[in-house]
Amino acid sequence: MSELFESRRQRTAQRLGISPLSVPRHVAIIMDGNGRWAQQRGLPRFQGHEQGGKTVEKIALYGVQLGLECLSLYSFSMQNWKRPKEEVDFLMHLYALYLEAIRPDLMKHQVRLVHLGRLERLPQKVVDTLHETVEMTRNNSGMVLAIALNYGGRAEIVDAAKRMATDAVAGKLDPALIDESTLDRNLYTAGLPDPDLVIRTSGEMRISNFLLWQISYAEFFVTDTLWPDFSEADLDQAIRTFAGRSRRFGDVKSQTV
Image (cartoon, rainbow, N blue to C red; front, top):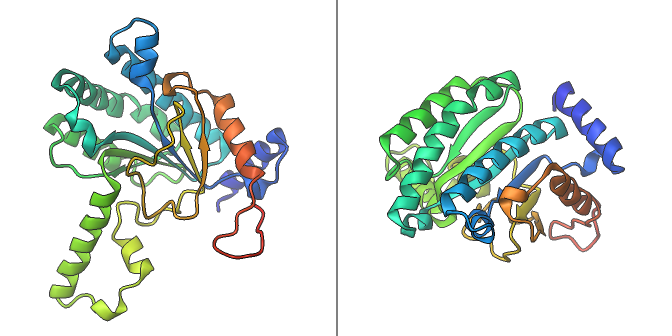
């Protein structure tokens, strides 16, 4: 871990009253509640998505301050295409604008953007902007911001299996040598640490097909707060709760965070 990450994690631990080892390396968030946030205020759903986009920017920058190595955000699932066309079209327009608008902050804070998901079905404007932003930040050495866009956990595992099968047919991979690390290297998250902490907003108690392989030993934190209202204080609370957990990783003896 770089000295910059270490110093930020030290400051975070001191401020929250926890051990530096208890600051998670990778936080994954299932962002939920944009529509309900708007509905509660008598607003159209698109205004909830707009406010949710502002929260993304706020929490991403806060993640940098906390010393997170990776922040993964579940932005748009493959199942979300079932939503009304007008809403989907607006979301795609919003993604294109957001991916372009955040570039100065990504570069300023050395954040590296990665995409989790399939490109198929995404509008060309989104694909182009996503590709340009990923390439622009490729050599940044700070926090990784992983955007799960047109993502599905089962689809990710299927895609990894297809890649391994292709390599096996081409003679590049011996099927007998396939193990967990082989699959890891073929996932969208290749090279990233597994999430330590998964946060879900809006009180829903579902994984929703998110990072099914990677969250095997992650801790969960569910809050009733709707995503547009999710704040830095909410993330602090989640980390404090995480720090108080006993993580066993399948062992009998408790292993504190």
